[in-house]
Structures are given as structure tokens and as C-alpha cells.
Amino acid sequence: MSEKFPTADQLKSELSRINSGKSFRRAIISTISALLVVAAIAVLLSTLFMPVLRVTGTSMEPTLLNDQLLVCNKQGEFETGDIIAFYYNNKVLLKRVIGLPGDVIDIDKEGNVYINGELLDEPYLPEKAFGECDIELPYQVGDSRLFVMGDNRSVSVDSRTTTVGCVPDEAIVGKVVLRLWPLTFI
Image 1 (cartoon, rainbow, N blue to C red):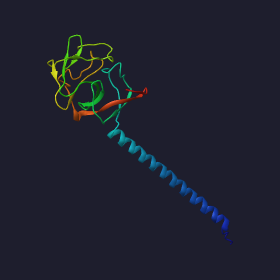
Image 2 (spheres, helix red, strand yellow; image 1 turned 60 degrees about the vertical axis):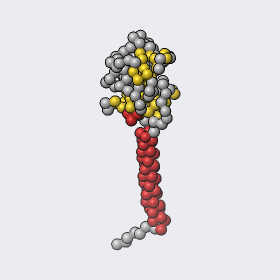
Image 3 (cartoon, helix red, strand yellow; image 1 turned 90 degrees about the vertical axis):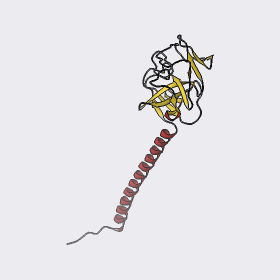
Image 4 (cartoon, rainbow, N blue to C red; image 1 turned 180 degrees about the horizontal axis):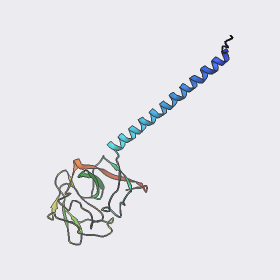
């Protein structure tokens, strides 16, 4: 009975094949690990600093349309005219900042908005409307709160109602800074 033993070249070849398979598996595992780390960092950054939101509803038309994707910035101060996202009843709403803490808001029956006695210039509105309002006007915005209204005033439920009221600082997600789809800066 003759047993055939592999030659040195055959052993080297087999060892090289086994080692290249291990190197390939290590490269795949390393690549997948790196991708998972990058994805986790991206999710963490978007959650903590730049949340991405999808528009639902018509209260901000024509400025924001249904199913558009937006990026918010959690940092910075808010000004009249900024569009913000905030939590309300486990939902995120998008509205425009109309009044800051201490401002006195008044709205006439035609839908003209006055801040501290001065007419607010609102070129973004398709049409003015008084809309749903059950607060007593003129209304003074409380400390650490923002008075917000939708751009589609006839259908928007916003700070004009006691249901939503003024938005407290702790409920604010951030200021809308970028529309991802279609891509435009706001």
C-alpha cells in the first residue's frame, strides 16, 4: 500500500489558499464593522443635533408640502418668521414663529397679525385668514414660549387655540434649515 504524501509546493499552495480565505473574512468583518459604526454615528448625530423630519398635512402649504423631507437645527435662537418643529401629543408639528416671549399678538378679522401694535409683513402667506381662534386677543406670549401659526391659516390648528397654545422651549425639536427633497435651503 502506497500512501502519497503532498509535496512541499502543494502544502504551500494549500496553506496560502486557507490564509487568503481568512484574510478575506477578516476584511469583510472589518468593513461591516466600520459601516455599522458610521451608521450608528450618523443616527446619533441626526437625533441629537440635526433631526430629519417628513412633512405630513397641509397646515404649512405652500411653503412646505406633504411628504417633503426637512432637516432641523437644534442649536441657536429663534426669530419671528422661522419655521420650527415641536412635539405636541406625541406628534411633531411644523409651524412658523410669530411671537417671541413677551410679545403681544393681535389678529383682526381679516387675518392681519400685529406684534406689539405693528403689522407683521407675511409675504409667505398664500392668503390671510382669521382661522380657528379661541384665545382672547390681544394675547401676550409667556416666558420661555413661542407663539406659532401655520402658513395655511384657514386650516392650521396652532397657538391661536387653547388646544395647542404657545410652544414651551422644552417641546421644541429645532428650527427647519434645509429641505432635503426637493433640495432647498429654507
